[in-house]
Image: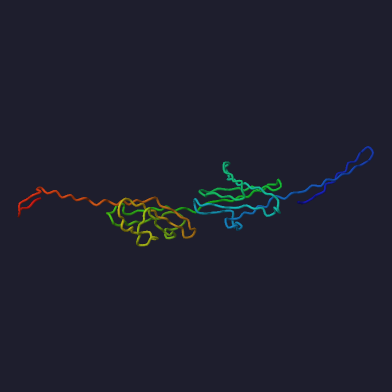
Length: 231
């Protein structure tokens, strides 16, 4: 706080008598806001870009609090329904937004703003064999379009809803699922951005295992004479 003295002198114009008094006023500083990332490091930039649907965590602090009580509140620009009464903002980033933090210390208020966005998400599409015979194989492939780079900028991995042996490399764009026994198998492909480590997931791709045909032999005659034939 900065202390200032203000003096006042009152003079009676009729007789020249005067009185004096003084008042002391203190000036309180505005809170100096600093912003920190999820590792408690000072934010390098207030323009933050992360993976789509990832969790953003930013914590506000006041560098000149010196033990004073500080209250914080986070809001979203043009969205009055969003509020987090905490020093830490934690939210899922699904679009570009401005988030505003308000810090109040000793009745004085300061604000700061961050802008969020996300890296472009590619479209991951699986194609291949939709049917196979019992204990057969299914050849699958994935295409990656859009996103923040070429398809070669992504690493592919495959998963299934059942235990399946995937050969030809489970991290390549073309694979073979081996020995599918019966029923249906659902496969997913994930594309991971090699630069930002953002994941994109395909829609489910289903492979159905056909049933083997049942063979029923019905002769025209169940009994024949020796040496004769039957159909």
